[in-house]
Amino acid sequence: MSLHRFPLSWVQRSLLVGLVLAVVWSLWAVPPTSLGARLVRDIVVFICAPVALAVSHGRDLGWRVDRRAIRNTLALAVFVTPFYIVGSSLPTIRAYYPMWATNTALTAFLPHAAAQFLVAAAAEVYYRGLLCVGVRELGVKSVFISPVAYAVHHVHKPPIELLLSAPTDVLFGAVDYHSESILPSMVAHGVGLALLDWLVLHPPLIPTSVVVRWLSWLPLPV
Image (tube, rainbow, N blue to C red; front, side, top):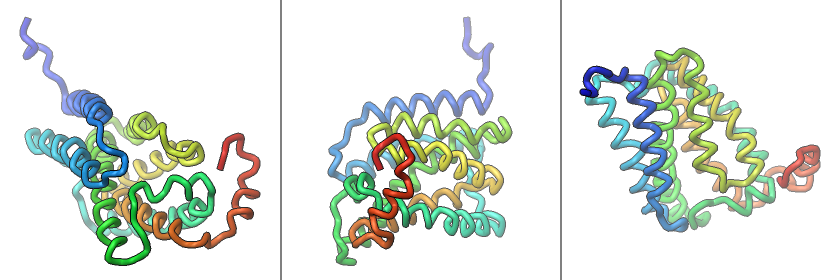
């Protein structure tokens, strides 16, 4: 029986390819200390494959850059900055970040931040582009798809970050969905990671003991 009798819609193809790419990304092992190897894998799996799929179908994964997208980008960046500042004081976050070796010398940190921004941008093309804005035909419920994939891919991260990743992913997806652009989440994620690394490489802006006391009610290590 020919498969052409059962053509897949764009949404079905996007979700199927998204699932395949999630498996490929998980099976493609890279040295955990190599930012370069991580960058190659993420560009191939999270950028090249989704973009090729979108182009072949004449689809848009959220490339819009207009006044609304820029406004929402600035608003999201302002909103998430305090969370990065507070997070940078937590012991588990300070033990985990930076994910790749760097230091405060600008000659080392700026290339590190630029490469890491590309990693974040690649993630946003996949999580918010292919699995959210790209399937906006599903309506608002499309913002709830990527948090599941993200959580599966990042189970190794600190518990407090994993706990907050679901609402953060929903927020990023909702902003991108209403912006019809992945620019807001791309900037918030990429610039936010650079900010977090820079803060962790310096003494906490808020004393660690204060933040730990604020979050002492949580039933997990902070």
